[in-house]
Length: 397
Image (cartoon, rainbow, N blue to C red):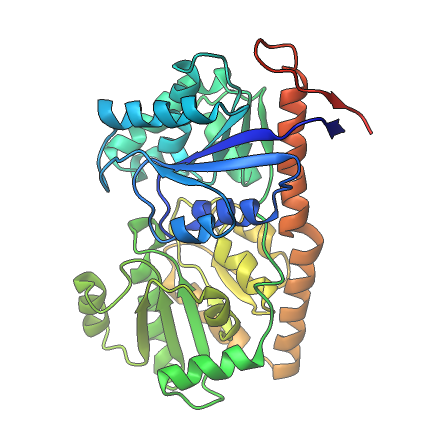
C-alpha cells in the first residue's frame, strides 16, 4: 500500500509516567515510519517521566492539564479539543481507559468524524478489584466500544475478559506488546555496573521486580516470597524498581521490617531500565491482577534473563517454556520457582535465557508489532478516503 501524503496520528494517553502502556507507546513511536505517519502525543495529565524522551524522537508532546489522580474538567476537555483542532489528525489512538474515553470524546466533538483506535493493556479478572472511578469508566467504555473503529488488546486474555464485560467483539483484534531487542540485550558490563552500584560481589545473585507501586502489582507477595527464599538462601539479593518504590514508601518499609528481610534494594523510578534488567539473574512479576502482557517479561527475556511470572493476563503465553509461571497471591509458589532457577546449573540457566530472547525476537519484536499497528491504521483510513476535506490516496503495492 502506498500513500501520497503523511497520515497524522494523535495518541491520547492518560499520563506519561513510566508504565507498561506508556513504554509500549514509546516503543511504537520509536519505530513508526515517519515518511508515512506524523504522530503527536497528548497526555491528559502532565509530561511525566517520558515526555522529554518522546520529544527526543521528534514527536510533539502536549498536555491537557488534568491533575494527577484527578478527573477531567471542562478546561482540560477544551484544551484537548483545541490540540486536536490544531493538528487535524486523520486518526486518534487512545491508550488506557481514561485516554480511550478522551480519544472518543475528541472525535465526537471535532468538526469532522475522526476514526478512533483504542489500545487496552489491562486485564480485568474481577471488576471489583478496580477503583470506583475506574470501574465506572470501564463500564462506560464498554457501552461506547461499538462506535470505535478498532479495539486493540495486548493479550487474548484481556480481549476475552472485556468482551465478557460487554465490550463489542466485532471490531477487536490482538496485537501483543513489542520490545526493542537492541536496547534490551544481554550485557556483562551492565551486570558488573549494577553490582558495583549496590556494593555487591560480582557473583551476587539478583532477583528483580520492576514496576510501579500499586495494589495490582502485589509487592507484598514478592516480599513474602523473598522472606521464604532467604531462609534457605540468605545471600540472595532482591532489587525493586519503579515509581514510589523507594525508601519513602512507608508501606514497603513496614513490610520489610515486619518480614525481617535483608538484602532488599529499593531504587525508585529509574531511567536506566535496560542496564538494570540486564543485570538480573531472574526477573519476576508478583501481580495479583490487571496485567495483560507485562513489559517486564519481554524486556527481561530480551536480555536473556529468565522470568518467574504470576499467571495473570497472557504472562504464560509470553514466557512460554523459557521460565516459570506460578499462581498469583501464592508466595510459597513464587519462592519455589525462584529456587528452581537459582539451583539450576549455570549453563542450563543461560540456555533458558537464550531461548527467552529467541522467543521475543521471533514473536514480539517492536518492528513486527509496529508493522501490525501501521497496517491497521492504513486499513482503517483506506475505507475513509472519500470523506470531506481529505484526499488520501492509498493503493496496493
